[in-house]
Length: 248
Ligand code: PGA
Figure 1 (cartoon, rainbow, N blue to C red):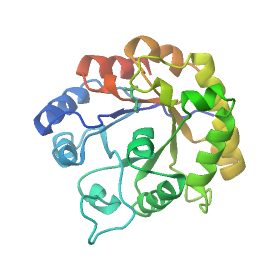
Figure 2 (figure 1 turned 180 degrees about the vertical axis):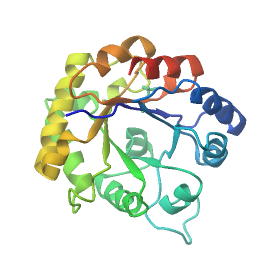
Figure 3 (figure 1 turned 180 degrees about the horizontal axis):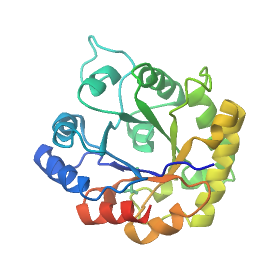
Figure 4 (figure 1 turned 30 degrees about the vertical axis):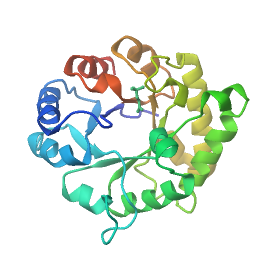
């Protein structure tokens, strides 16, 4: 089953509007046929970045969104507002959201519903902590996160779903999962997806995330169940992110 490789940059709370626009314009020249590429700026930079790359194949995504469409929800941004600002993707359930902002599989499930209702592409993040891995809980954690986040959806609704497997211990630490560890987890994720969405599991792109760099991208991306990368730190510099796109 051929799946189009998908490389996404998660800028987190980095890059001002002008910095983000400059990087995104540079990235347009680094795109290559057959590889889907997106950047996920802060809410502030999303619209100007989307405007700056309009007409190119570089996609833009949000890093999160609220589940209500609008109203008295101070500090939030919704899927419909992200779409209106030019987003095509939304990252959901990033481990930093789970760790620092109280996100749970139940709230991610509500956000996912809003994202799909707007026709945006969800990038659903899952992953275990080091304590969970060491405690032999890897599979249980991944299964709980997938089944909890996707509860109540049909396979037809999840046609565009992208999953990002990001072991928490590998995020921003410089400590990448080995390609064998990553492949093993990805194959397991796909098997759980098969239980939830049936044959669609063969078409769902599963990105790896956690200290992906130019020098490890090729090895990771050559694994059969690794269909792309969600890149944090190395997505902030044109040369680094371009090299990861080139490796795909
Ligand atoms: P990192 O972040 O590449 O800096 O480890 C990845 C992520 O959190 O998505």
